[in-house]
Image (cartoon, rainbow, N blue to C red; front, side, top):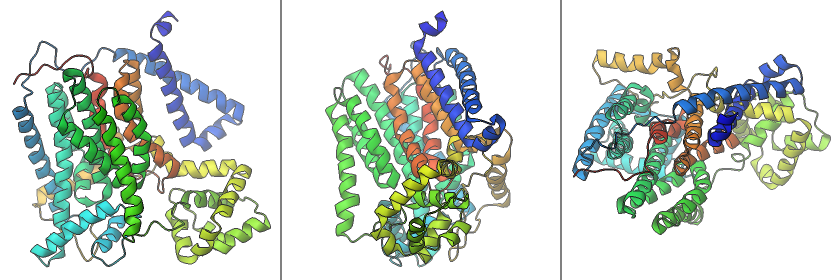
Length: 538
């Protein structure tokens, strides 16, 4: 008991993390636990016992890691001058770019996701621009495609231009992480393990060669976190903010806001934390994120409207309530005459219920979009939301299960579904392998078989990545590194937006930002950035 009182931070965070992990486990396997326990009272007791057990284990683990550091000893010098940092950066960049290029050649000229196929049509002017997918990303596609067609009439060349640019940007972000870790005097073996992970784990290479906004979004968030971390060091060590870090802070903040719709929402959540943190230390570091957020709101609002860019249709923001309502009907919920009339005026609700998919909202959403009356839904949106609330109060368990089915892969490591991170080029851009047979066989084996290796498959688990993120967040609290908690906020805010309204369970690219920033977060609790001035040798 005296030990618990002595280290109150470690005790409280261990209990809090125990509650979090237990809650995720119970929710993800709710049917199993309800059947096992038999009553709500017993379920609550089981939950409390599980939380206490996990908390006790975490208390011991956090204690064992209290004095672990990944930094070089204070007496050991390292040349961290600008020239050496640039050397490390460019070495990492060109190695990673070469590796990512092999994945492009594996499925030349690159791969398309279903979403990017639609964006490609917008970029070519075959469809009107829509803010359903980020316009900033669509404009990059348009720039690369137009440049490619200026060089050659071959569409594969045009798509390859985009793939090369995206791979270079992702390699640049990861190289900046490596050079920053070198600057922060992180031990070389730690840097080596992190660098190797970008090559060994195939999803980095596969996604680098796939036209998806999530790669750019993840890279921007990584650069944002690195900029904040570097500013923390420079302000503590030198009393001033680096102009380079301030510039990257602004650019990456704007990128986070513009390259995913939920990125803007997540950044607004992050904004008060970064403003309060830097307000007394650096006015520029506090103001620039505000400017980025305001600029993003202006661009996505009045600017897009002035250009005639269409916002998402009415069913898009109502997809989650529609999923809840459909699940309640599937479970046998009774509708009043007025409720059934309202729903049937939108779409044949019984036909929609037959299309219900527990882990995907698109089946019902697309049915309503194709067969329903969207004008009626738009005119009666308030009544629709009122119906959603009323039905939810009558059928809370159906709503809860419907939502859990959509977020299970984001809260629990041991899900049944296979993580999807491989995409293939669709006609008319038929993908072709331009690598020698043995090299192609190696990449194919990495992509196909690695996710199914026992234990190693946790490196591919969305839920495991989130759990590790939360574990490291708790470790920072246990080690009393409170100032560094701000680095976790951007990604956790994005994750929270997924918990509120994700259209698809266990989609890897939705949380690729977690995997992209996880190497940094694995170092943060074991560093002492805010304690002593880093020793540099020019």
